Amino acid sequence: MILSKKKVSIIGTNGIPARYGGFETLAEYLSKFINNDYDLYCYCSKTPREKQLIKYNNTQLIYLPFKANGWQSIIYDGISIIDSLLKHDVLVSLGYSGAFAFPLKYVFRKKLILNIGGIEWQKVRGAKASAKLEILFKKWLEKISVKISDVIIVDNQVIYDYVKSEYQIEPVLAEYGGDHAVFENVNTELINKYKFLKNPYDLTVSRAQEDMNIHILIDAYKTVSNRTLVVVSNWEISEYGKTLKSQNLNKYNNIILLDAIYDLRILNTIRSNCSIYFHMHSLCGTAPSLVEAMSLKLPILCYDVPTNRATTEEKSYYFQNAESIRSILSNLDRNKIRKLGDDMFEIASRRYTWQRIVNLYKICIDNYGKN
Figure 1 (cartoon, rainbow, N blue to C red):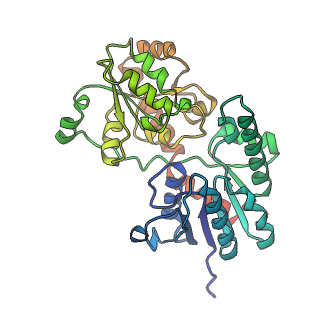
Figure 2: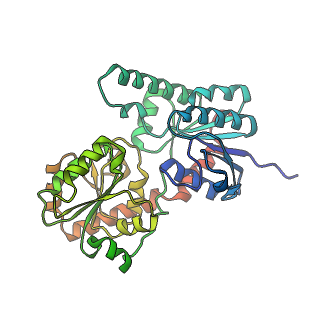
Figure 3: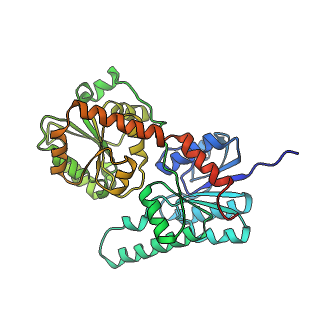
């Protein structure tokens, strides 16, 4: 007798192939590693018909006529959840923006696995009434989604401790893989385009948001004339980014500001060959960009928050202002930099591999939970 496979759906992302952030990359590697164990489905954002795929990584793709971001995301998430509850056995929800539809799982008696991402309400900024309302709304969404889900997955020890303390629930700690990051050697073609590749340079690749703290790094390097800093960012997405770029572009010989680079080969080349990599996130769990940099054996300096310390096991160097960056740089020598890269790679090789992460998801699908 041949047992039918569980039907497992991945919801809450733009879909695969991954072209966006951490959740999409997670969805891609789930599809790559578990497609033989289950009948796998992935819901995808609005895509022109000529670009739609029937399957990817042996995963059935289900396209909806709505975008996964902006105001349409509410409809997108709701339809994804309802359709999945009707057709599939297990839902793997990456994020809880569709939490309003989660209670329907009781009607359909399906298993719901939730990766909550970060502590979203902590990211809200401002003292206005609208910000306070947004915090209350996100706390409510978080609460109902955690209480309703059969399994809670978190991506950082700090979030693990928060969920366990706040909700008396034992979550599953499953971070992200970084071993897909590919080392690329510098070639003549890229040197002609990016002259800084000929010499040592330090790097950050960060979104132009205030919680990325790019301004701190730029301020530090204004007086570190013996080192070159390269910043890759999508400057135009925010007033913060536009202002920072206009104030500093071509103003300092050792500070190079580049627009966002979406060609992965070029980006990997620039990342792979930097002398020091700065991880600037302050409001994230385990950031995919950080574990990718660790997997590339890069010496990494981190913005000092508990989540970054947890990801790097307290083995990086940590800063919160320009002065502490300058102090760290002045005390680093070649041996310390080499050891830092070795330490980051050892942690990544032990913890941040896709095979390990995907195996944790398989255990959740097969064993954990109420169903």
